Image 1 (cartoon, rainbow, N blue to C red):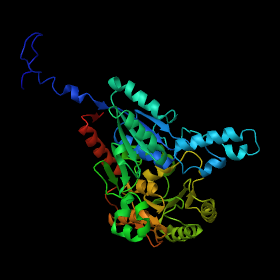
Image 2: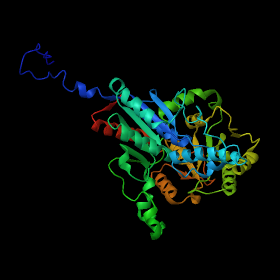
Image 3: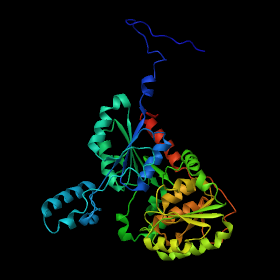
Length: 427
């Protein structure tokens, strides 16, 4: 072992800094805390929290939430930037106060900031987003606590995260999840699905009329600060699934196998459907029942009432089929842990990403209703052998596997590399 050379006493000239001390100062700049900026959407906030978990900072995070005025005329103003929306809301309230139009204009002043739902990481409170406050805390505590990792997701969070980086670039590392459409240099990293760049592919160019191409974003290939994923980030990592398996053991372990989990989302702009898909799902589920031990059905917040009503009425009372009634506790994580196979509607990139991270069979229904970048997403999943179409001809007892999707782990690796380029590390 090489002997340690101790420093000379003060006053001895020509002395170099001993090796035992060189590099120590540089290694002390460690990111040990995270700030998540959400928009109230469980899917968006789940992506932020999934990345924070993958970086090992889940026990040292603060969740802020961007809120908008709700109700009344405000439902028509969500296309505006948040700050302008709030300003218009204040002006309208002042102008129409004590008039008959006040209820139409006012609605509810602000969206309620709940503590439940997508949080799921032991947070005791959710704070109203305030860029100046976040900047002040990051600056004031930098010497003692080190840099702050900022992770934001959703359109409404862009102005907050970009402002924080502008005001405190030396104290924070800012990650924006979901493509911000323009000026990507406002962020240290942008994390977005590969299919967001579908407009630049040959297929995308064929679908876009030439007249509209200049309005479709993004218009440039991903730059060096862009990290591409297959699907959405989430919190359903191996540790979370182990805990869920324990928590739901008594309810799910005794069920006859194989256990088929059916997750139903709701129509979106790029994947429109209605009761026709519900009837298709019912028929296909009946066809595979003989090869199932148990079936559990869950609806999402986006599921149209007419879709859930048809499915619930059809399956009500069937001895093999259980339909979650929406009451807490939510069995979603337990389902991911204990399922033998999944059926997921094609509209939900989040639910598909979670199911495909388990390595278990995932069947998709409704891809024929999808278009644009959603079609590109499903094509990628099929090419990777991660999903198969749900036709009703499947034998659920015949299992198959694939390399699970690990988007959060892969993004976390890239984040660590980018932070290391700043001379920092993630604690």
